[in-house]
Image (cartoon, rainbow, N blue to C red; front, side, top):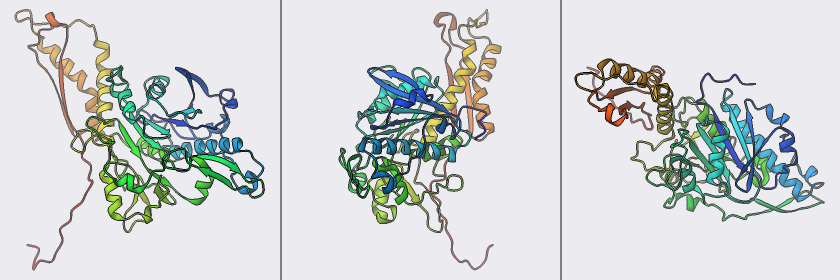
Length: 425
């Protein structure tokens, strides 16, 4: 059982679309039943992995000896339950002090933005990141809108910012028959199978401002795991990604080699291709399209995430997950410290009608407290807070504060020059 974190930075959510899962025991075992329009989510709060068993979620044996006695519906239920157990286990392996809000959607439709927002509302606005385990990338634009708004009020407008990590089905997502003699399962695709050619082709997912969404296409293709997960095998390693992000400080990249070794047995892609079977040139193209996957480094036996991309453009201040998590933490902290002063009196200089110097100095200190705390733990390199004393607060009743912060860099590349010289001097 994990020790809980002293702050809310590790709090995460995982929303899984699992058609075929039997819902009979979910509510009875402790999942809350939450209506979202005409749909239903089953949500539970997990502080440690062992809670899953109490919620009725246990791993099933998917060996042929067992499967030949099962129906197709039973097989789908077992595969869905195994997917829950696997991804939740991976989360807590990487973030033992984390909290995970687990949401389950059992019908065949895609996860929609209202369900994304409901996960944040259920948590009381505490989620810093949400993994979305869904059929396709059809609603990727809506997930960004859920956070930043536009068509309707977004989570950021409600002071509940969120980063969303999306993974989707690469292929083979439907079981149609089981042999009573051998236990062999006939599996087909209801999705257009994803391919390496498509992943490396010109990406249409990257868009200016799409900074709250990332796409994961890397997974573990270990044979025993693929058998265990069945129709849910060709999705990204979302529990692992969530766990690494939960364990990281907000400024840290989940691709940091020294801190986030993944231990994936057979790294590959949701296409079904093993990493070792994909050319270096194709891997580079997939990377350039800002997908997140699993890679290796020469001379190192472990494996790691390739980077921490968002779907924003590479030149954006929010091109990486850590950029977004850092500023979200700053915004949350600044708001929390200033909120007690909302609608409070502000003394002005009697002669000028402008803000009193003592008030300016005090509120600058209040606004900067959260940033000072972040700087102390190296989540920021520095910051400044400025309040213009010439603001006419008597007329506007609105105080404007200008805050600038300097982030912490990430060493994505190292260039070493080495050669012989005749002397060191």
